[in-house]
Image (cartoon, rainbow, N blue to C red; front, side, top):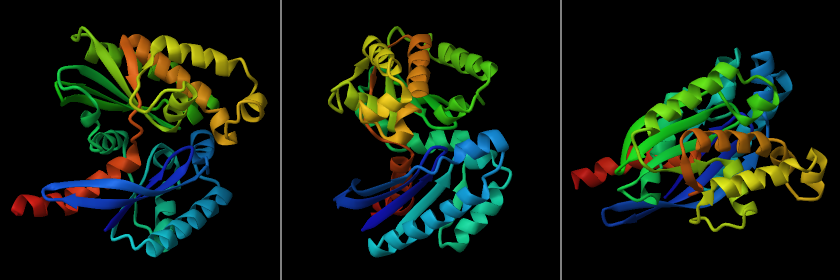
Amino acid sequence: MRYAAIDIGSNAVRLLIADIIQNNDIVSFKKNTLVRVPLRLGDDAFIDRRISESKAVDLVKTMLAFRNLMDVYKVSEYMACATSAMREATNGGSLVEDVKAAGIDLQIIDGAEEARIVCSSHIEQHVANKKAYLYIDVGGGSTELSVFADGTLLASTSFNIGTIRILDNQDKEETWDEMKAWVKIHTREFKSVYGIGTGGNINKLSRLANNKEDKPISFAKLKSLYEYLNSFSLKDRINVLGLNNDRADVIIPACEIFLTLMKHGHLRQIIVPRVGLADGLIQTLIDRHLAPTLREA
């Protein structure tokens, strides 16, 4: 059995195809195929407040390709969600209809729902029950934050601060202040708070830091890596460091977001489990279609 998740973000569009594994009462999934297309819808949405005709055409073509891939892989269930860029584009609704004509039922979700879906990927499995954690998911248009303590989700929210938004000078100082204040309020009762980071940029930063997936990154290590990357021009980050064109620019504002949150939340270190919205969508499908069957059994 295979499920699929389509994540239409501000920087890239992703298709995750996963094999569903059922072992008695336990259902899990293994990533089979991941396709990423850097459409950068946020460049249009955050500046012009609409997706341009050329990018709309590319989006529909991508959805057609994803539909064909899902058919070839014999995917039985899928979910497709669009986030910050499509939320803010005035023609987001009409694009949903264009995508539907391409064979994909697409839903535009708000920031709170985005945070809920990402949290459904069971990130609590990556943490110890008796500690407090600030979960940080940095995207191109928004940053989703959640606070866990003793394995329980205590608070969750979303802010319009993201890597593409920053590069396009569309982030607002008051939003930064609101985010800093939210973090301070929701972490101040804990003596120690650890971070959990997701998104393509923190995954890449984890690899650049020569860390294993389960090895945390300290604030000092991340700050040092930020300063090292920022010492290179965009061209040299691509040609000398070997970063992809669509990663070399956004990785700098991503560092700034993570460092800001670590500072104001007094986070000692950040864990990078490498899960995200697509993982949460797969888990949502499992909970929707398979969990009820297990409960009835």
